[in-house]
Image (tube, rainbow over all chains, first blue to last red; front, side, top):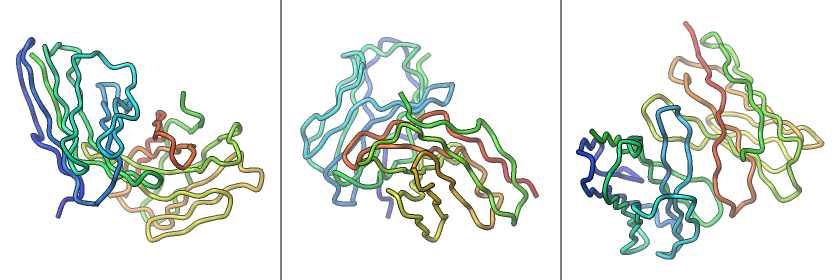
Length: 111
Length: 109
């Protein structure tokens, strides 16, 4: 069983569209994250949720909105997609302290 | 705002030990040293972490100097599958995980 799973794995879409990436973890963790890895391979944290509450919100355009319906899910919704949003997005989870487990990533390409 | 310094890249022969250094001279007393790696096209993978004592698990060993200003991750018998970018991260136990640029380890036959 995959511990942290993301869907879809690949997403190609046109500029201006709205899209969502889903993330689920079956580890019983209380903290979930979204990271963005750009073309230069820098991994940057975007959001962190603890028990469905937003804890960290880095400087991310408000076109990006995370939604956590329950502790096991943290979805990422992106409005009005731009070319610069093209990247690999990683979901992760952890206990409040301790190692983080990452999903396999969603490669988003905006054309 | 990564708090660590790592070499950009390293090579290691298959079967030999890979020793990856990390400097963290500004580490504070309650901060841990974490190591993660990212194999091409995969999500980052936790390897090991420590506070001040040396640590060992099934993947690697972590040697932390007595003054805690530097550490070394040791992969005792590197394989081709260990080729990856290795990240050394310093953080408090509940702090967010901030990745630097890491060390690209190439294991060759």
